[in-house]
Every structure is written in C-alpha cells, then in structure tokens.
Image (cartoon, rainbow, N blue to C red; front, side, top):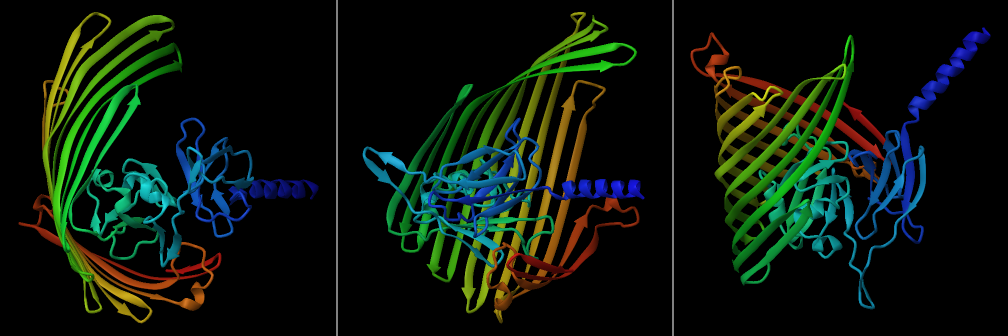
Length: 528
C-alpha cells in the first residue's frame, strides 16, 4: 500500500511538472502602469530563432505556453526600448519598459504611441500620426505591430503561422509591394486571427493594411536609399512619384536592388561501426543579385463611397551563385576519398508581368469588393559544375531549366448589414498553368518536361451576429459572435487523372460549419 501511495505521489508530481509549462510575467512602464499589447516572444539562444510569442493583456500580464529551455525573452513595444532577458524559470517577474526618445541637441523629441484596439475579431493598430508613421516602409511597420514577427516580407502571426496580407483590399502577390509602400501613407493595420468563410480554409490569419486618403493636388514623390554591409555591400534605391488631380491619382514606383552575399559552413560527421568513418565537409557560398522592377497605376476615388483602380508591375532580375564545396572522408584514419566541386549557377528572371484591377464601394447599404489579377512569369536557370575526386578525375555537369507560369484570379465579396452583424456572400475563381523544361548531360538524372493545369471555383455564405451582452469586458482577440457559414468549391482537373472520363471532370467539395463563440473576460466556449 505504501509503495502504491509513493508511486501515485511520484506520478502526480510528474504530471504537475508537465502541466506547468507556461512562462508568466507582467509588462509595465517606468511609472509601474500596465503596458498592454506589448510583443513578448521566446527566442532560441543558439540562433535567436522565434519559438513562441504572445501579446500582453490589458493588465500587462502575459503567459507563453512553453518551457524556457535556456531561451531568451524579448519584449518590444512601440515607443519603448527593447528588453531582452534570460528565461530561467516559469515566472520572469515584472519587466519594466523605458521610453525610447531621440535627443536632438538639448531637445527631446517624442511622438505619440499608436492607438491599439480590438474591433470584432481584429487587432487594429492606428499608424497615422503615430511613431509608426516614421518607421520607413510597410515592412518596418509590420515588424512593430502587436502579434506579428518577421521581416522583409516574411511575417508570421503568433500561433497562426504565415498570414495572408492585403493592401487596400487586394492580396499582396509580391513581397516587393510592402517595400514600395511608405509608412507615412498607411492609415492602420488589422491583424485578424480568426478569418471567416470568405477566406480559404488554409488561411489561419490575415493582415489588412489600409492607406490614408490622398490629399492635395499636383506632383509629389519620395526618394529612398537603403544600404547595408554583411561581408559585402548591398544597396536598394527606390523612387515613388505621384500626380494627383481631384480624386484621380496616377503613380509609379521604381526600384533597383543590388547586393552580394557570403556564407561559410563546416560539418564534421563521425560514424562508429565495424570501422570508424569520419567525413569533413566545407562549403563556401557566394551570390550576387541584381533586380529591377517598376509599378505603374492609377486610383480614382469617385466619392467617399466608390473607388476604382488598376496597376501594372514589370520587373527582371539576374542572380549568380558561385558554390564551392569540399568533402574529405577517412576510414579508420586512412584517407579514402576527397571531392571538390566548384561552379556557377545563373538564374535569369525575364520580365515578369502582373496586372490588377479592383473596385471597392457601397451601393446603398450593399458593400462591394472586387479584385481581378493576371500574372505571367518566366525563369531560366543554367548550372555548370566541375567535380574533381582523389584520383584527379574531372567530371563536368551542365543543366538548363526553363519555367513558365501564369495565373488568372478573380474574387467578389458582397456584404450587407444584418441586425447587429452582417451577411456576406461571394465567389472566387483561379486558373493557373505551369510549364517546366529541364535538360542535363547526366544520364543518371535524365531530362524532364512537365505541365500542370489547375482551375478552382469557390463560393461562400457567411452570417455573423454580435452580442453586446457577452462582449462587455472582452480582452481576448476572439470575436464574440455567432457565425454560420457555408462554403463550396469546384475544381477542374485534367482528364488523364480519370481513365473513365473522355474530357474534364467537375467535382464538388461542400464544407458546412456552425460556430458559436462566446467570450467574456477569459472564458471561451466553442461549439462545433
């Protein structure tokens, strides 16, 4: 009996330790006041990689569902200096943030912090007239928005992965669009952690960027240069030009990027079996990148209820890689093989075309959001590698690959207010084609020629209602709402996928969901 009791105690203790996985603390300002919506992330000590992250609540408290594992806690908030501290236990205590002000001589310059608020199922950060308006580009703004981490177009939302990013209602298809958008032109940023039925099921989060209405008339523009040094010098030059007359605006964005990158790695592998096998690998990588692209377009705000616009993007780039690889193998201390490889890889992206047309407006109480895109791209890659082994035998490998891709996409969303919520109905259609040709002089690899066609159609219906009684005092990002949505998709696939069909086959995938989410303070009830 005593043995059973002891075993039970040990099991309960182990379970308690396993359940206690949260890292907790509180973020305050210099006055000791709670600091809400501060980004608190856990980083890996070895490579500073992102592990998990949360935002502080209205009382400044936070809880990360993870263990420290010797990591680093990093706390950031707009207008405050970044704090990094060792994660040594479950309770990191109170983290005091100091205001970040710039000194100009004897004058201290302070800007207002952005207004951050929860609206429905979105966390809205107001950029206009705040410190974020001077951040630089949209990339720099998103780096400082609560619940978002990443840089240079590669962003993640805490716990939701890679988001779908919109600028004024159209999907960002090219990361360069974020670099082209000046922070002073941004009105607000919405982070949606619970997207509705109008988004694909694979979309776990959405970021919506809205720009300020254009003011003034005549010519205007900005010139921007960004230089850096990471073993080699890199540079980006950008010119944004505008002409505005009434509600019509014509614009162009020109960008040129050049840079060289360097990487070095050493790997030592030892395998102990009947013999002791040791392999040393040394790799050196050099890459040079040159890219030019331009964007031309117009937007016409007919009035506060109707806006239409279109743009065209064209660009080309050349990337050169110089791989240098060396491998030495030993068998019980005896040299068995030595292989060295050098080469040149050239990737040439010929002019890539991207055109968009959109309309956003209201017809009475009916909201209309329409977008249509067309993209065409071609890429050519050539590779020349020279390999020499321990016997001074030379092997040359050459390859040539050409890839074509094009896509047409259309999406229409209609919305109408319904009681204390709204009803949304819409459709989306995409058609894409990819062609790839690959040729090489190595018989073991062989040549290949592939072609892929895909067409998708989808429709959705969403009804959302919000209850004020249950939403009072809400601090979570989950919207307190009743959602009833139905989404269906139709895909068109080539006939070779179906031996019994003489032509194309249509099939339907019906998705139905009823979601009731009730949230009050820190309690959530989800019924599916």
